[in-house]
Length: 423
Image (cartoon, rainbow, N blue to C red; front, side, top):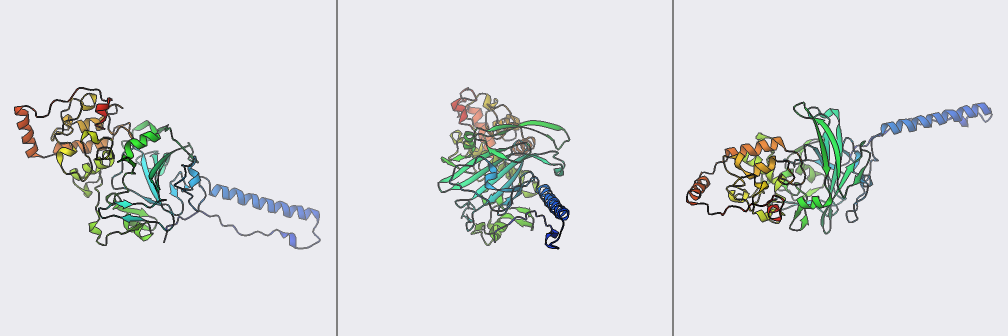
Protein backbone atom coordinates (compact mmCIF):
# COMPACT_ATOMS: atom_id res chain seq x y z
CA UNK A 1 0.00 0.00 0.00
CA UNK A 2 1.51 3.31 -1.10
CA UNK A 3 1.49 6.27 1.32
CA UNK A 4 -0.81 9.21 0.74
CA UNK A 5 -0.96 12.70 2.15
CA UNK A 6 -4.11 14.21 3.60
CA UNK A 7 -5.14 17.13 1.42
CA UNK A 8 -7.02 20.13 2.69
CA UNK A 9 -10.60 20.46 1.55
CA UNK A 10 -13.37 22.99 1.80
CA UNK A 11 -16.83 21.48 2.20
CA UNK A 12 -19.77 23.67 1.32
CA UNK A 13 -23.50 22.93 1.28
CA UNK A 14 -25.14 23.14 -2.10
CA UNK A 15 -27.17 26.31 -2.73
CA UNK A 16 -30.11 26.42 -5.05
CA UNK A 17 -31.27 29.79 -6.36
CA UNK A 18 -35.02 30.09 -6.37
CA UNK A 19 -35.30 30.45 -10.13
CA UNK A 20 -37.41 27.33 -10.59
CA UNK A 21 -40.25 28.44 -8.31
CA UNK A 22 -43.03 30.54 -9.77
CA UNK A 23 -42.76 31.17 -13.47
CA UNK A 24 -44.34 34.54 -12.82
CA UNK A 25 -41.37 36.07 -10.92
CA UNK A 26 -40.89 39.74 -11.53
CA UNK A 27 -37.78 41.10 -13.16
CA UNK A 28 -36.78 42.53 -9.80
CA UNK A 29 -37.07 39.14 -8.11
CA UNK A 30 -35.01 37.53 -10.89
CA UNK A 31 -32.29 40.13 -10.46
CA UNK A 32 -32.28 39.63 -6.69
CA UNK A 33 -31.94 35.87 -7.11
CA UNK A 34 -29.08 36.25 -9.58
CA UNK A 35 -27.36 38.70 -7.26
CA UNK A 36 -27.64 36.28 -4.34
CA UNK A 37 -26.21 33.47 -6.47
CA UNK A 38 -23.27 35.66 -7.50
CA UNK A 39 -22.56 36.66 -3.92
CA UNK A 40 -22.62 33.04 -2.76
CA UNK A 41 -20.26 31.95 -5.54
CA UNK A 42 -17.92 34.87 -4.85
CA UNK A 43 -17.86 34.01 -1.15
CA UNK A 44 -17.10 30.38 -1.92
CA UNK A 45 -14.20 31.32 -4.21
CA UNK A 46 -12.77 33.73 -1.65
CA UNK A 47 -12.97 31.24 1.22
CA UNK A 48 -11.42 28.49 -0.92
CA UNK A 49 -8.54 30.76 -1.94
CA UNK A 50 -7.98 31.62 1.73
CA UNK A 51 -8.04 27.97 2.78
CA UNK A 52 -5.40 27.02 0.20
CA UNK A 53 -3.16 30.05 0.64
CA UNK A 54 0.48 28.93 0.58
CA UNK A 55 -0.42 25.46 -0.72
CA UNK A 56 0.36 23.89 -4.06
CA UNK A 57 -2.11 21.53 -5.67
CA UNK A 58 -2.36 18.15 -4.01
CA UNK A 59 -2.36 15.02 -6.08
CA UNK A 60 0.02 13.32 -8.44
CA UNK A 61 3.76 13.95 -8.47
CA UNK A 62 5.05 14.58 -12.01
CA UNK A 63 8.72 13.67 -12.51
CA UNK A 64 10.48 12.37 -15.62
CA UNK A 65 14.00 11.69 -14.38
CA UNK A 66 15.33 11.12 -17.91
CA UNK A 67 14.38 14.66 -18.96
CA UNK A 68 16.44 17.74 -18.17
CA UNK A 69 15.66 19.18 -14.71
CA UNK A 70 12.67 21.51 -14.78
CA UNK A 71 13.23 25.25 -14.46
CA UNK A 72 10.55 25.50 -11.76
CA UNK A 73 10.36 23.11 -8.83
CA UNK A 74 6.56 23.38 -8.79
CA UNK A 75 6.56 21.44 -12.08
CA UNK A 76 7.12 18.27 -10.07
CA UNK A 77 4.29 18.89 -7.57
CA UNK A 78 6.34 17.55 -4.65
CA UNK A 79 4.84 19.73 -1.93
CA UNK A 80 1.33 20.44 -0.77
CA UNK A 81 2.67 23.23 1.43
CA UNK A 82 6.26 24.20 0.68
CA UNK A 83 6.56 26.78 3.45
CA UNK A 84 5.76 24.16 6.09
CA UNK A 85 7.43 21.38 4.07
CA UNK A 86 4.30 19.24 3.88
CA UNK A 87 4.81 16.75 1.04
CA UNK A 88 2.29 15.72 -1.56
CA UNK A 89 0.70 12.29 -1.91
CA UNK A 90 3.23 9.50 -2.37
CA UNK A 91 6.15 11.55 -1.02
CA UNK A 92 7.27 10.37 2.41
CA UNK A 93 9.62 12.11 4.86
CA UNK A 94 12.70 10.50 6.37
CA UNK A 95 15.79 11.48 8.32
CA UNK A 96 19.37 10.30 8.81
CA UNK A 97 21.03 9.22 12.04
CA UNK A 98 23.82 11.72 11.40
CA UNK A 99 23.11 14.43 8.81
CA UNK A 100 25.71 16.62 7.15
CA UNK A 101 26.39 20.11 8.46
CA UNK A 102 25.07 22.85 6.16
CA UNK A 103 25.87 26.11 7.94
CA UNK A 104 23.25 25.43 10.62
CA UNK A 105 20.40 25.03 8.13
CA UNK A 106 17.58 22.70 9.17
CA UNK A 107 17.31 19.74 6.78
CA UNK A 108 14.02 18.25 5.56
CA UNK A 109 14.33 14.98 3.63
CA UNK A 110 11.79 13.14 1.47
CA UNK A 111 11.71 10.22 -0.95
CA UNK A 112 9.44 9.46 -3.89
CA UNK A 113 9.30 6.41 -6.15
CA UNK A 114 7.17 5.57 -9.18
CA UNK A 115 4.25 3.20 -8.60
CA UNK A 116 5.32 -0.42 -8.57
CA UNK A 117 9.00 0.25 -7.84
CA UNK A 118 10.98 -0.20 -4.64
CA UNK A 119 14.50 -0.20 -3.20
CA UNK A 120 16.51 -3.38 -2.73
CA UNK A 121 18.37 -4.08 0.51
CA UNK A 122 21.85 -5.39 -0.35
CA UNK A 123 24.04 -7.95 1.45
CA UNK A 124 26.28 -5.25 2.97
CA UNK A 125 23.40 -3.05 4.06
CA UNK A 126 23.49 -0.93 0.93
CA UNK A 127 20.20 0.47 -0.40
CA UNK A 128 19.78 0.27 -4.18
CA UNK A 129 17.23 2.80 -5.39
CA UNK A 130 15.15 2.01 -8.49
CA UNK A 131 15.29 3.99 -11.71
CA UNK A 132 12.79 6.85 -11.48
CA UNK A 133 13.17 7.42 -7.74
CA UNK A 134 13.82 10.89 -6.33
CA UNK A 135 15.50 12.00 -3.10
CA UNK A 136 14.57 15.46 -1.86
CA UNK A 137 16.40 17.60 0.68
CA UNK A 138 15.21 21.07 1.64
CA UNK A 139 17.26 23.53 3.68
CA UNK A 140 15.86 26.30 5.81
CA UNK A 141 16.61 28.47 8.83
CA UNK A 142 14.34 28.46 11.86
CA UNK A 143 13.47 31.97 13.00
CA UNK A 144 14.48 30.99 16.54
CA UNK A 145 16.46 27.79 17.12
CA UNK A 146 14.90 27.57 20.58
CA UNK A 147 11.32 27.53 19.28
CA UNK A 148 10.44 25.77 16.02
CA UNK A 149 6.89 27.13 16.11
CA UNK A 150 8.07 30.62 15.17
CA UNK A 151 8.55 29.75 11.52
CA UNK A 152 11.32 29.01 9.07
CA UNK A 153 12.98 30.68 6.08
CA UNK A 154 13.15 28.01 3.36
CA UNK A 155 16.15 28.67 1.09
CA UNK A 156 16.94 25.66 -1.10
CA UNK A 157 15.65 22.30 -2.26
CA UNK A 158 18.00 19.74 -3.82
CA UNK A 159 16.87 16.78 -5.85
CA UNK A 160 18.68 13.53 -6.52
CA UNK A 161 17.06 11.73 -9.46
CA UNK A 162 17.89 8.15 -10.36
CA UNK A 163 18.20 7.80 -14.12
CA UNK A 164 18.90 4.58 -15.98
CA UNK A 165 22.48 5.84 -16.40
CA UNK A 166 22.94 6.80 -12.74
CA UNK A 167 22.16 9.65 -10.37
CA UNK A 168 21.86 13.31 -11.35
CA UNK A 169 21.42 16.28 -9.05
CA UNK A 170 19.56 19.57 -9.34
CA UNK A 171 19.41 22.46 -6.90
CA UNK A 172 16.57 25.01 -6.61
CA UNK A 173 16.62 28.39 -4.84
CA UNK A 174 13.36 29.57 -3.22
CA UNK A 175 11.92 33.06 -3.52
CA UNK A 176 11.29 35.13 -0.39
CA UNK A 177 7.69 34.02 0.18
CA UNK A 178 8.32 30.32 -0.63
CA UNK A 179 5.84 30.26 -3.50
CA UNK A 180 8.34 29.05 -6.10
CA UNK A 181 11.88 27.71 -6.43
CA UNK A 182 13.97 28.10 -9.58
CA UNK A 183 16.76 25.91 -10.92
CA UNK A 184 20.07 27.44 -9.81
CA UNK A 185 22.66 25.95 -12.16
CA UNK A 186 25.14 28.72 -11.37
CA UNK A 187 24.34 28.74 -7.65
CA UNK A 188 22.92 31.60 -5.62
CA UNK A 189 23.52 33.59 -2.43
CA UNK A 190 20.67 34.12 0.05
CA UNK A 191 20.90 36.28 3.18
CA UNK A 192 19.48 34.63 6.31
CA UNK A 193 19.08 35.62 9.97
CA UNK A 194 18.09 33.67 13.05
CA UNK A 195 18.29 33.57 16.83
CA UNK A 196 20.78 30.88 17.83
CA UNK A 197 20.48 28.39 20.70
CA UNK A 198 22.35 30.80 22.98
CA UNK A 199 19.78 33.54 22.32
CA UNK A 200 22.19 35.58 20.21
CA UNK A 201 21.17 36.87 16.75
CA UNK A 202 23.13 35.52 13.80
CA UNK A 203 23.36 36.66 10.19
CA UNK A 204 24.74 34.62 7.33
CA UNK A 205 24.84 34.42 3.55
CA UNK A 206 23.71 30.93 2.59
CA UNK A 207 25.26 29.64 -0.63
CA UNK A 208 23.31 27.43 -3.00
CA UNK A 209 26.09 25.45 -4.72
CA UNK A 210 26.60 25.53 -8.45
CA UNK A 211 26.57 22.32 -10.47
CA UNK A 212 30.35 21.93 -10.48
CA UNK A 213 30.48 22.24 -6.70
CA UNK A 214 27.91 19.46 -6.38
CA UNK A 215 30.20 17.23 -8.42
CA UNK A 216 33.10 18.17 -6.14
CA UNK A 217 31.47 16.50 -3.13
CA UNK A 218 29.41 13.75 -4.72
CA UNK A 219 31.60 12.23 -7.44
CA UNK A 220 32.89 8.79 -6.47
CA UNK A 221 34.58 6.61 -9.09
CA UNK A 222 33.38 9.10 -11.73
CA UNK A 223 29.74 8.58 -10.73
CA UNK A 224 27.53 11.02 -8.83
CA UNK A 225 26.31 9.50 -5.56
CA UNK A 226 23.92 10.95 -2.95
CA UNK A 227 25.14 10.79 0.64
CA UNK A 228 23.42 8.95 3.47
CA UNK A 229 20.30 7.10 2.30
CA UNK A 230 22.24 4.68 0.11
CA UNK A 231 23.31 2.99 3.37
CA UNK A 232 20.84 1.27 5.71
CA UNK A 233 22.92 2.31 8.73
CA UNK A 234 21.89 5.93 8.17
CA UNK A 235 18.19 5.07 7.76
CA UNK A 236 17.96 2.58 10.64
CA UNK A 237 16.17 4.85 13.11
CA UNK A 238 12.66 5.82 14.17
CA UNK A 239 10.65 8.62 12.58
CA UNK A 240 7.49 10.37 13.88
CA UNK A 241 5.07 9.63 11.03
CA UNK A 242 1.45 10.80 11.11
CA UNK A 243 0.53 7.17 11.79
CA UNK A 244 2.86 7.09 14.80
CA UNK A 245 6.55 6.59 15.48
CA UNK A 246 8.04 3.78 13.39
CA UNK A 247 11.41 2.45 12.32
CA UNK A 248 12.05 4.02 8.92
CA UNK A 249 13.24 0.85 7.18
CA UNK A 250 10.26 -1.14 8.44
CA UNK A 251 7.92 1.65 7.36
CA UNK A 252 9.47 1.72 3.88
CA UNK A 253 8.96 -2.04 3.69
CA UNK A 254 5.33 -1.68 4.78
CA UNK A 255 4.46 0.94 2.14
CA UNK A 256 6.28 -0.91 -0.65
CA UNK A 257 9.38 1.28 -0.85
CA UNK A 258 11.83 -1.45 0.24
CA UNK A 259 12.37 -5.16 -0.37
CA UNK A 260 14.80 -7.66 1.14
CA UNK A 261 14.98 -6.28 4.68
CA UNK A 262 16.60 -8.92 6.96
CA UNK A 263 14.14 -10.76 9.16
CA UNK A 264 16.62 -10.48 12.02
CA UNK A 265 16.41 -6.74 12.59
CA UNK A 266 19.48 -6.78 14.82
CA UNK A 267 21.51 -7.68 11.72
CA UNK A 268 20.79 -4.28 10.20
CA UNK A 269 23.69 -1.87 10.82
CA UNK A 270 22.96 1.37 12.63
CA UNK A 271 25.02 4.56 12.54
CA UNK A 272 25.51 6.51 15.76
CA UNK A 273 23.89 9.92 16.11
CA UNK A 274 26.80 12.34 16.29
CA UNK A 275 25.33 14.50 19.08
CA UNK A 276 23.50 11.82 21.11
CA UNK A 277 25.74 9.97 23.61
CA UNK A 278 23.02 7.35 24.15
CA UNK A 279 23.65 6.05 20.61
CA UNK A 280 27.38 5.45 20.90
CA UNK A 281 30.68 6.38 22.49
CA UNK A 282 32.78 9.36 21.44
CA UNK A 283 34.72 7.31 18.89
CA UNK A 284 31.65 5.97 17.07
CA UNK A 285 29.96 9.39 17.06
CA UNK A 286 33.09 11.18 15.80
CA UNK A 287 33.58 8.56 13.07
CA UNK A 288 29.92 8.95 12.07
CA UNK A 289 30.40 12.72 11.81
CA UNK A 290 33.50 12.36 9.63
CA UNK A 291 31.87 9.67 7.50
CA UNK A 292 28.96 11.97 6.63
CA UNK A 293 30.85 15.25 6.26
CA UNK A 294 34.21 14.15 4.83
CA UNK A 295 34.28 10.62 3.42
CA UNK A 296 32.68 11.35 0.05
CA UNK A 297 36.02 12.94 -0.92
CA UNK A 298 38.36 11.16 1.48
CA UNK A 299 37.86 7.57 0.37
CA UNK A 300 38.94 5.30 -2.43
CA UNK A 301 37.48 6.72 -5.62
CA UNK A 302 36.86 10.16 -4.09
CA UNK A 303 38.55 13.30 -5.35
CA UNK A 304 40.53 13.67 -2.11
CA UNK A 305 41.96 10.16 -2.02
CA UNK A 306 45.30 11.31 -3.48
CA UNK A 307 46.05 12.33 0.10
CA UNK A 308 45.79 8.69 1.17
CA UNK A 309 43.25 9.68 3.82
CA UNK A 310 40.19 7.43 4.21
CA UNK A 311 37.52 8.81 6.55
CA UNK A 312 34.82 6.22 5.93
CA UNK A 313 33.20 4.84 9.06
CA UNK A 314 34.30 1.26 8.42
CA UNK A 315 37.98 2.15 7.89
CA UNK A 316 39.63 0.64 10.99
CA UNK A 317 43.34 1.20 10.28
CA UNK A 318 44.27 4.28 12.36
CA UNK A 319 46.96 5.58 10.03
CA UNK A 320 44.50 5.49 7.11
CA UNK A 321 42.03 7.74 8.92
CA UNK A 322 44.84 10.10 9.92
CA UNK A 323 46.56 8.93 13.11
CA UNK A 324 50.23 9.94 12.85
CA UNK A 325 49.73 10.39 9.12
CA UNK A 326 51.90 13.13 7.65
CA UNK A 327 50.22 15.38 5.05
CA UNK A 328 51.13 15.04 1.39
CA UNK A 329 51.92 18.75 1.31
CA UNK A 330 52.24 21.53 3.87
CA UNK A 331 51.61 25.26 3.80
CA UNK A 332 48.58 27.16 5.08
CA UNK A 333 46.43 24.03 4.84
CA UNK A 334 48.56 22.22 7.42
CA UNK A 335 48.58 24.97 10.03
CA UNK A 336 52.13 23.99 11.08
CA UNK A 337 50.86 20.56 12.15
CA UNK A 338 52.95 17.45 11.55
CA UNK A 339 50.10 14.96 11.39
CA UNK A 340 46.49 14.81 10.26
CA UNK A 341 45.70 13.50 13.76
CA UNK A 342 48.11 13.55 16.69
CA UNK A 343 46.52 11.51 19.50
CA UNK A 344 46.04 13.52 22.69
CA UNK A 345 46.81 16.79 20.92
CA UNK A 346 43.83 18.25 19.05
CA UNK A 347 45.59 21.63 18.92
CA UNK A 348 48.40 20.05 16.85
CA UNK A 349 46.12 18.03 14.54
CA UNK A 350 45.65 19.22 10.95
CA UNK A 351 42.19 17.62 10.74
CA UNK A 352 40.81 19.80 13.53
CA UNK A 353 42.60 22.89 12.24
CA UNK A 354 40.84 22.60 8.91
CA UNK A 355 37.44 21.80 10.44
CA UNK A 356 37.69 24.98 12.54
CA UNK A 357 38.87 27.23 9.72
CA UNK A 358 36.60 29.49 7.67
CA UNK A 359 39.40 30.44 5.26
CA UNK A 360 38.30 29.24 1.78
CA UNK A 361 41.85 28.03 1.08
CA UNK A 362 42.07 26.00 4.30
CA UNK A 363 38.63 24.91 5.52
CA UNK A 364 37.25 21.42 5.22
CA UNK A 365 34.90 20.55 3.73
CA UNK A 366 35.72 23.02 0.99
CA UNK A 367 32.13 23.04 -0.32
CA UNK A 368 28.92 23.04 1.69
CA UNK A 369 29.98 25.15 4.64
CA UNK A 370 31.45 28.61 5.15
CA UNK A 371 31.07 28.93 8.93
CA UNK A 372 32.51 26.66 11.61
CA UNK A 373 30.31 24.01 13.17
CA UNK A 374 31.08 24.71 16.83
CA UNK A 375 29.38 21.58 18.16
CA UNK A 376 31.01 19.33 15.56
CA UNK A 377 34.41 20.85 16.29
CA UNK A 378 33.86 20.20 20.01
CA UNK A 379 33.14 16.52 19.31
CA UNK A 380 36.25 16.03 17.16
CA UNK A 381 38.33 17.91 19.74
CA UNK A 382 37.17 15.54 22.47
CA UNK A 383 37.74 12.51 20.22
CA UNK A 384 41.36 13.43 19.48
CA UNK A 385 42.06 14.48 23.08
CA UNK A 386 40.83 11.12 24.41
CA UNK A 387 42.39 9.04 21.63
CA UNK A 388 44.49 6.21 23.03
CA UNK A 389 46.89 4.33 20.75
CA UNK A 390 49.83 3.52 23.09
CA UNK A 391 51.65 1.30 20.59
CA UNK A 392 51.43 3.91 17.83
CA UNK A 393 52.49 6.66 20.24
CA UNK A 394 55.52 4.63 21.35
CA UNK A 395 56.44 3.82 17.75
CA UNK A 396 56.28 7.50 16.79
CA UNK A 397 58.48 8.41 19.76
CA UNK A 398 61.08 5.93 18.57
CA UNK A 399 60.89 7.36 15.06
CA UNK A 400 61.34 10.88 16.41
CA UNK A 401 64.34 9.80 18.49
CA UNK A 402 66.24 8.42 15.52
CA UNK A 403 64.96 10.94 13.00
CA UNK A 404 61.68 10.77 11.13
CA UNK A 405 61.40 8.11 8.47
CA UNK A 406 59.01 10.47 6.68
CA UNK A 407 60.74 13.40 4.96
CA UNK A 408 59.32 16.78 5.98
CA UNK A 409 56.50 17.90 3.70
CA UNK A 410 57.20 20.44 0.99
CA UNK A 411 56.12 23.99 1.78
CA UNK A 412 53.49 24.76 -0.85
CA UNK A 413 50.47 26.99 -0.94
CA UNK A 414 47.18 25.53 0.32
CA UNK A 415 45.51 26.26 -3.02
CA UNK A 416 48.14 24.61 -5.19
CA UNK A 417 47.39 21.38 -7.11
CA UNK A 418 49.58 19.44 -4.69
CA UNK A 419 47.70 20.70 -1.65
CA UNK A 420 44.31 20.13 -3.26
CA UNK A 421 45.06 16.44 -2.94
CA UNK A 422 44.41 16.78 0.80
CA UNK A 423 40.81 17.68 0.02
